[in-house]
Amino acid sequence: MSIYDFNVTTNKGEEVNLGQYKGKVLLIVNTATGCGFTPQYEGLENMYKKYNEQGFEILDFPCNQFAFQAPGDDAKIDQFCTLKYNTTFPRFKKIKVNGGGADPLYDYLKENTDGKRIKWNFTKFLIDREGNIVGRFAPSDKPEDLEAKVEEVL
Image 1: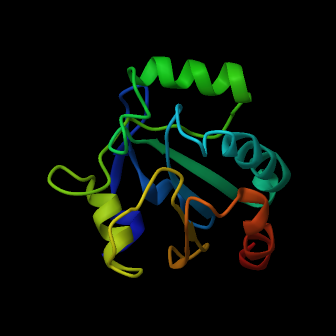
Image 2: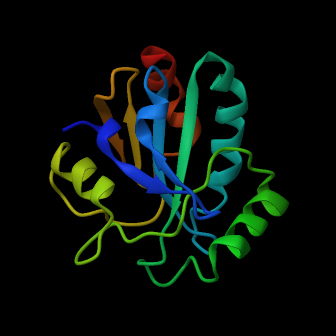
Image 3: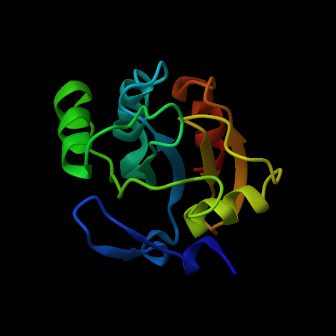
């Protein structure tokens, strides 16, 4: 099994196979609109604009599991992110990342790194062009702090 075997749902309700991202470097992030780390959207968007043409994608998975910091439906979350932070990277349907009902993608990401639960919003997973997980980063790791690692993988 690889990351490319997973199907996810966009915030518009369309099912997407992650195989469409083969050959790209991915940063998969569980996000929230009302979190102390929410301003990281700005750094994520800056990184996306800087590296997207080189084959870099950010996959944004809103999650309301941590102190209910991603309230509202998918449309409301998307509106907040695009209006407040001008985000242009792909956003997916709100998911759970831990426990019963956790999205299978996140179970895979956890099992294939340190096996630990997601601690909070803005946990980040870096995936190389072959679909290998090359890094798991804490919520406190700012997007700008990951740039050297992203450049190395690109």
